[in-house]
Length: 236
Image (cartoon, rainbow, N blue to C red; front, side):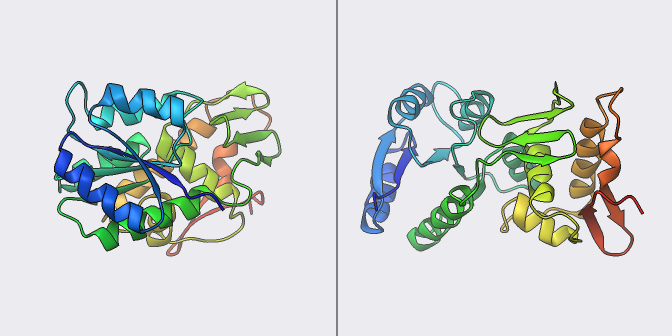
């Protein structure tokens, strides 16, 4: 089995070297870049299995690069772990809402880094990760990062996309907010209940955006009082 390729993007040579040595010892193939321009070219040319991306970079922030990658169909599903010294909840939510898969705060241990990378790769390399998911005339295509209802495109943010994908692959099951957070966001990030509820409301709004649809798909995302949320095709 070929070793996964990790792109390390950081403008500090000492950090790139430390991370590269740790990941090499763990069995990964390493490539590196010191700014966003180099990183983007390397991603297009080398198609790494995961991008380890510093938030603060010369020539444009890591956050801007993450947004660019998520907008581009060719890179929309490339796993991204953000490295940063920013520690506030707002910073974490901002990063995760951009579509990054995990968030590691500096300083970090090599063991933690390797464990996080392996966890993200396991999630992203699922057996059927690119299968089109369908409920009635709602289609979610993970490969192209597109959603449609009755062949009409539905626009939603990256967090709502991950929420919907999670619900579609776990229909008829009730999940509390902690379980949803651990599956859709990173398990190491604390989010209060209001943050998750806001994204549920945004998801419902996106699903009801096709006005002449034969079904109000927003009603399939159901609140279970005192328990959490479920996605169900049964309205009763």
